[in-house]
Image (cartoon, rainbow, N blue to C red; front, top):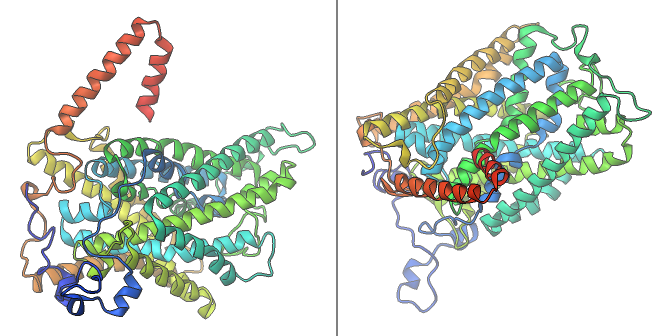
Length: 582
């Protein structure tokens, strides 16, 4: 079905061409060509964009193992390693555990709902593209720019966290010096090829996964008194009213830390746009999300809460205890008698921050690329070089991160705090909107008479998961406002800081709607269900998926039958279990 009007604007209709209608050549022509003197790029474009051109495309070079590991541990960073301590210190270990469980349920619903769409239409714009295509162009514009701001402003946060971790060894080096040392190699890796990003994230994530598994094992053994000479606390931190402290207000505040920890789980849907076989790798990656939530969040929070009391001064709380430099994970290892391993653990934490910074650059540049290609940003940011790297988009993300990092110094960090507040609720808005988009996708699919067997991955229990996403988004939205409003003494600035991101969201949506109405003369806002484009960028044509699923199911059944006849019952059972989860 053809794309609906207004979903994929032609050059004459797009916002980019409204401000710049000059034809841009694909590349710098070779000297000696007849048109060289006429069509040669300006110097500033050659310096800024290199060999990038608007006709180049990103490369589908990431393998299934890359996407799976990105889904499992790609964005595990300072949120779980540092902010987890703040959640326990704020409301106690029981409240923190419950908060991470609720947000984990929220996260699971979001990833499954989004994965169904991303496996079928794997594009770098992900939910921003889906929002424009299935709901309205204004929604795609709003989601894209909010998400780009969220990731661009997150880079300085990761750099600051890296400085905190590095000060464990040497506090004489200033934060901005560490920032330059860290950001340079990460940015250079992004410039090489998407396969470099995939491979680096694979090994970064592997290191984090191994470290967290070891932490959980050592932490639980220590807590149960299994380390000779180092008696563990057992369940003492959950007794005598210490599990839940501060009431509902404190509990609501822990959602902020939980969201920060879970942030980025939707990154796998962006990476699907550069995956070799997205119809296979995306379903595997999103199924791995369940293990990520249970092992790397729930069990980590439980282990920290069991071993460190909520009143312990070593819990890192950015608001009141900025001098503490060791992660709660490092503290647990030290108390378990592995003091010599503290340096190794801190080094792994640094690896986690490098990984998170790497993901920040990737997510921000790909979203800006998608916005430009959709006509929602200046066209130059849609240029890609011969290796499939969006050079201009990467440079803008770098520039914004530098300016934002400077705000951590200017005005004692007040500007930086407000920039974080600007995007602090962005994840909540994006996640809640994904639920709405999923409902619209299924409604359009049904309205156009398509079979669900044509989807590479089908979310279970529809519409339970997208509805859960919307409901939890609203409840947590209210809870965060309630938490900021009842703080004593009351400070209106806290309420404004909580919801300022909503103002940005609304301004973007209304602003683009007015532009569409007044400039493009588009009188239809929402895309009719029968005109929703379900074919562009799809992994296969209508009807192909149903046939492939049937052939694969028959092949699997035949193989299982043959092996059962050979007496290989255990092998067949294990393969079926593995197939279900992975």
